[in-house]
Amino acid sequence: MIVLRSDEEIGQIRKAGKIVALTLARLKKEARAGITTKELDTIAESEIARHGGHPAFKNYKGYPATICASINEGVVHGIPSARRLKEGDILSIDVGARIGKFFADAAMTVGIGRISDGAARLIRATEEALFKGIEKATQGMRLSDVSAAIQTHVESNGFSVVRAFVGHGIGEKIH
Image 1 (cartoon, rainbow, N blue to C red):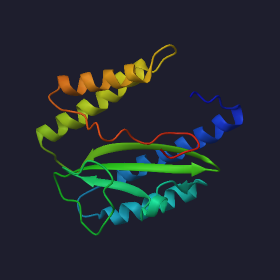
Image 2 (cartoon, one colour):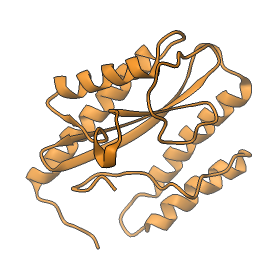
Image 3 (cartoon, helix red, strand yellow):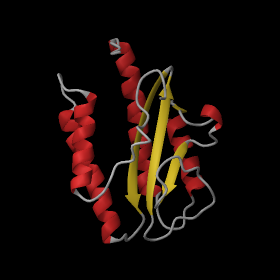
């Protein structure tokens, strides 16, 4: 079902999305060798609050953190810990924020210092796939058109998609 939103509701969703973007930008600057994912989690919670939002994931079905932080082969839902990032790691950070009753969510993957050529190719291919999907997100297209564009690009670069996880989103529900 497609839900039509008022201008005010769209404004709240947009504000939540901006908080997510600002938080990801801050975490990208802070993600370096020697920092722990728990320290990044603390930074994220502070950044979300500083902009008037609330962490979307914290305490959701018992989840203990503000971000999901998955290192290297970890796919999703990594719980921040005392593990220190090291040179060559790749880190996926997922952030969600809530403003009032509306959620926004986004993730990014960053290299920690100098990363392998394969890791760099993975990050580049997934970023390109995002833009391929965005190109298909137009009036008259279906969600399957978006996902097909993403999957086709990822697979053409020698990688695969994880079909078991389809992500979060925006709106009144986190899933």
